[in-house]
Image (cartoon, rainbow, N blue to C red):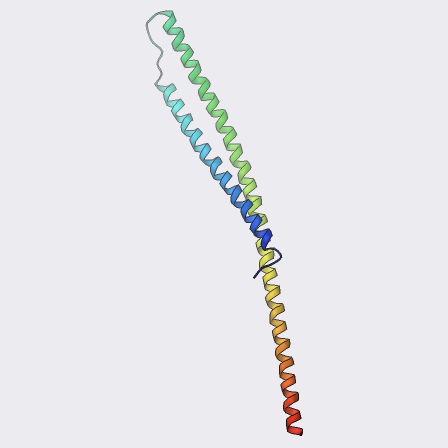
Length: 143
């Protein structure tokens, strides 16, 4: 049985599924960036500045250390943005889910109204049939 809301419910469900997929993707992105951040921290923790050697080697190692720290800062910034994206998609998913549930409820209520209308029509038809049968039976007994 179709309702006036069936098409809207289908569209809202598609939108909700789309938001859910985006949210899952954003959460996976956060996990990936957290892993990258952990790797960057581990590399930085393992890094050791040489105790001896020439100035060129030391300069190179210090530059490498600076690059590793910049990578760590970059990962932290990306993680912050990714977490904000997750919050944004959670909000969008919540709104899409709310809209879907509203339309689903309206569709269900529409179905209930239609079922009641059909039941009333059946009761009226049965009453009419009973009245006609009674009238025919009454005519037969009179005649």
